[in-house]
Amino acid sequence: MQKPPHPDYQRGRGAASAAVPTRFGLATRETDGDWRDHVQSLDGPPVKLRTEVTEERPRTILSFNQSPDVPFDRSVNGYRGCEHGCVYCFARPTHAFHDLSPGLDFETRLFAKPDAARLLRETLAKPRYKPAPIALGTNTDPYQPIEKRYRITRQVLEVCLDARHPVTITTKSDRVLDDLDLIADLAEQRLVAVAISVTSLDPRLSGKLEPRCPSPAKRVAAFGRLVEAGVPVHCSVSPVIPAITDEYMEGIIAAVAAQGVKSAGWIPLRLPHEVAPLFREWLDVHYPDRAGKVMGIVRSIRGGRDNDPDFFTRMKPSGVWADLFRARFNLACKRAGIDREKARILFELDCSRFRPPETGGQMRLL
Image (cartoon, rainbow, N blue to C red; front, side, top):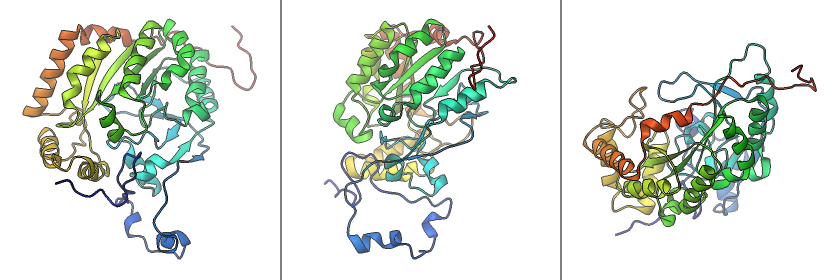
């Protein structure tokens, strides 16, 4: 028998509630007399959520990391929060740093950084700067819906093209094609690679998991456009959710291979911090009949925990179920003619072309 939906659940949103973070004391703070502490008792239940965007003005835009689990050491994030609303998004806990909910706040209360391109240009122009590929889309999607309004990602790509600086793009959106002119120019100089994530081939399931993402069919078609333009493109089958999306692995690989894709990988579901209870709520709303099975398999590939946060192992599930998924994925790639080792050369970007960009109206000498 299906359980009643969560009282805060709203169709068209990924999270079922505005889960309150507990790590930073927000859940236990005392009311301060502000009207917002009593808004529901005064005004009644909340109305349909609308997306709000706050512009912020950071002093720097290039972030560096030393993680052994990711293939890049620097990134640019033009947005915080993501309207795509993917319930499984590992970036949701970042909203908790600002006393905002990793649940509904993450997908409705967004932040944009309009100065991103200017800040990047200034950083790349510094005499001691040494180039290495900049990753876009490592935290939240650079082609989420508000990119159509702000064009921050496009402006960053323009800086990279001007400076001949290598850049990688990870997205769940066919909106990447809006910048195909820039991306094709970058690809011609071996300065760009694009990865698109596909979770399933079922638009109804996608509408539950990632309610404001473009449909799987649009994403698959985008691969073909990028390949035709000569852009190195990678299909990320992610996340693989046991007993929910794993049945689509083989179909996704076959579909993108038919579009000319030569590189693919898979990433298992990760549930850091507040993502775990949010995902459990999502299961209760949409798949209460198999919630126990899903979480049982998740724990089996994560050493008995909902999530493995450790370096070196967090991206590498273990156990019988993990071995099964890995074997299925490798066989699907073999049948589709995708040689994952040979494909690596497609993503070796050229740092030798870099030239510091112009700043403050100063023209280049050469």
